[in-house]
Image (tube, rainbow, N blue to C red):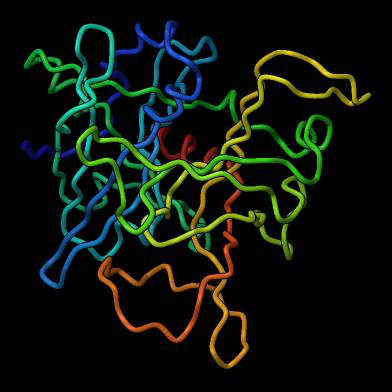
Length: 295
């Protein structure tokens, strides 16, 4: 297990050669990463996913990051990232390659809006340092082209759509193969509208702690166009990032779950989940690019 201090680097060393022969769903599974955080008081788990911004208009200079929630990492001293290594041009579905980093302002970038529960962890230095050692990580990153604006969503998506959520609910994962858990649900509010005036929407899905930071994905290989004519072809959008869910208390009240609850261990609850999730719109990720380009 290695520890690195992350500074922003614009070059990354990621194996992506094998993805041409990999089904899109397997690519999506290789786009997430398990995150564990710890301090003297305890530990917690969460979900992150790989994302590339670009420093130029020709998409040649990547600014690679891992996206997760503020509450997943804030308040903890160290962050453990469970990467996959590469065998040939394929991901190594075996023991993870764990990189531990300190949690500070040089390793974690906070979203500039204090009410937006997102952080970006720059990963260029990790990739470059491991390249020097001959170690190649396997990461498939989303990028800005996968983020639909509201007008595109209104044109191409229906108010109710099936979605996928990929992550580590309650810390659950395929430990043997270092793989996440996939859940399927539907949009519970119209994704191109701002739910209650905030840049977010709701999904109808079982959302638990540990799923925080999970990408919410719209994926179709058969779809209908705006005239409801069936089409065959890939549609893949990153719609948002899960950060919380409403709870129903024994007193009959509906409250938002506390995303700052750090423990992953079972404890007595006086509320139950409503199988709904709050999702931050993916367009909020673009605020990080402004910060990265100033570095």
